[in-house]
Image 1: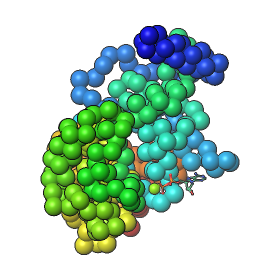
Image 2: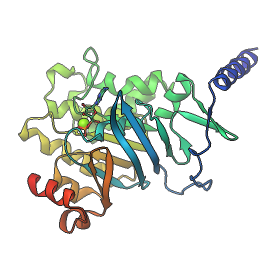
Image 3: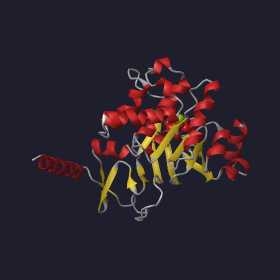
Length: 290
Ligand SMILES: Nc1ncnc2c1ncn2[C@@H]1O[C@H](COP(=O)(O)OP(=O)(O)O)[C@@H](O)[C@H]1O
Ligand SMILES: [Mg+2]
């Protein structure tokens, strides 16, 4: 009986999605049908986005490699946060597409048309991508342990005992075993951000997006968070890090993207971007920050 109701719900959702179908022609042409071996490959093609009349993303094209560390550097206001939010479907793009392992973000393709996914499906797909924010965004009324167990229990349906066991291991991994009963207000900024990283890891994502993870921290707390991210960089999870910590980016990244005025202006290994950038804008930005 339950299965029948579920099937019916799915049918209704498909029918509703059909009513909002948009043309995929010219949007979904390029992605390969072959699955990649490593997971968490992000393909960004022809992405544009406006906020009102402001053109924030201007034809962004990028291939972010699975299992590698990619840092995005660039001036404030150039659209870096908007790009990360688009990868996580917290923002909708106006045209172009973003796919993770050939799965479109926020859309399903049938034939020549794209259909926006329902909220529940978006939530499910979003569990493959975790985001760590500049301002930590922990739940203030929950302990460190509860912050880490919340999503695995409520979104993934993992048993409380299992979630607690995994959360304890993750808090140990970020050096916070002794803080599991502390509330965010009782923790330093660096400790809160490490809880936020443990919370991201608890969903076992293929991709973790970091949006300036250390820029809200007092200088003496930056190192402990960078250390944890540095450890993660060896884990085989795809990491995308927006940061102004150029020394750190150079050290841990496989690839660097220089983002300027809504465009991925330059992309390459750290040695190229930092030592022999091809664009004058990249050189100018780096020389100001280093
Ligand atoms: N929700 C929004 N509505 C309108 N403008 C926005 C919104 N979010 C960001 N912007 C503007 O878009 C530009 C790019 O913002 P953002 O993606 O945050 O850049 P960055 O992360 O590189 O500093 C900025 O000029 C910002 O003011
Ligand atoms: Mg930003």
